[in-house]
Length: 196
Image (cartoon, rainbow, N blue to C red; front, side):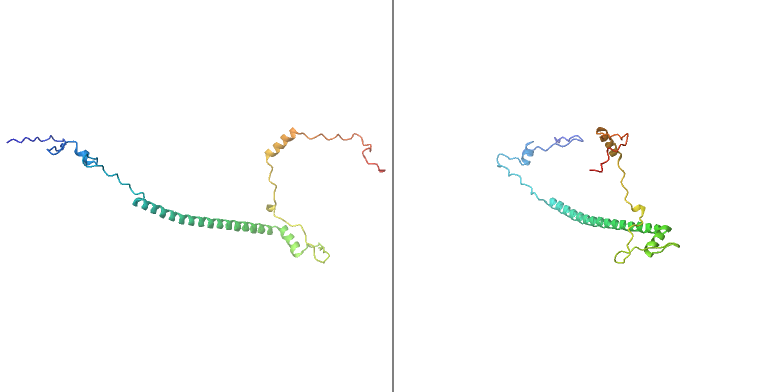
């Protein structure tokens, strides 16, 4: 007896088996969950919970990161405050060093040494006489004049050029009134009389 089954050619897909109990095309529709006429209505799909395990892990990771960053930020702010305090102390120290260097330069000047000897120790040069002015209680009056470092003097800030330019513009718009001309002769008429 000859075999009536055909073998499919190579590389082709085998087709679904169709048998006496199977109808092609119906199996996919019944498997997908669609309702069949004899079975009734399918139950509604269940809602997924809002807070899942993945969300819990994500919240935990964010909390750990926030805590670690908060501690790092606190350490950073403490370090910045310490750095600012050290900078301020460094500026004060450098200012005092500058003052001491200025004082050292002063003491190298013979005129300053001479003035300090006169003021503090009341020394006089050879051939000079020293006079001390006393007040009503017999105490010596202190001298009000002092030597000062030129670097300590307050200098007036220079005036801006546009200020002077604007003043000239205002002066051009409102010129000053001319002064009366000088007298050609002095006749004494402007002098007050002795009788009055």
